[in-house]
Image (cartoon, rainbow, N blue to C red; front, side, top):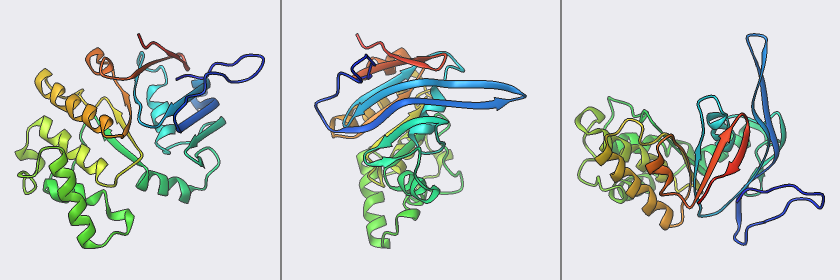
Length: 241
């Protein structure tokens, strides 16, 4: 739920443990001598286990917010925490550890290496974790089974449908057992039937306890969420019905 400010301070704290907390977060940068403010004083709390979608117009700040949540960038001002880690103040090493161990990423373009098999693509996501070879094999097998591709591990991306490629990408993200899965238009390259398959999978992952934060233009995706946010002109509001 979004925190709103009053003269007595923040209100409406969630009753379940908090995963993300943003307090007065702003992001500013200069583009061709023009000051751009994709985020302006954003206050937001995301409890563990939520399925949150973020909608809004192009240029409204959605990608910027996802980059901050993913520890890929820092806010210009404000406080942003993931659990006990302050992502605004943490060292570059700590941010790298958060990305490697706590945050899974899924993108519209799948981002699979075409010369590697599904098994090898999933395994690559585990390289920073320092696991033994046996642990990595076990996690890869479990992840591919979880997304329904146990029998496709030796297939390369070009031998898989778009929906199957996105399943491999999701398997790569969940193999490291993250606290949150961040997805940027995860169904944008899929037809309607494949989109629904991926939505069913994401919803199952959420029901199993994984926190989801999904940027989307697709209302069918947003309707699956437990909470819908709209980000426009750098400000955020809850549009859950």
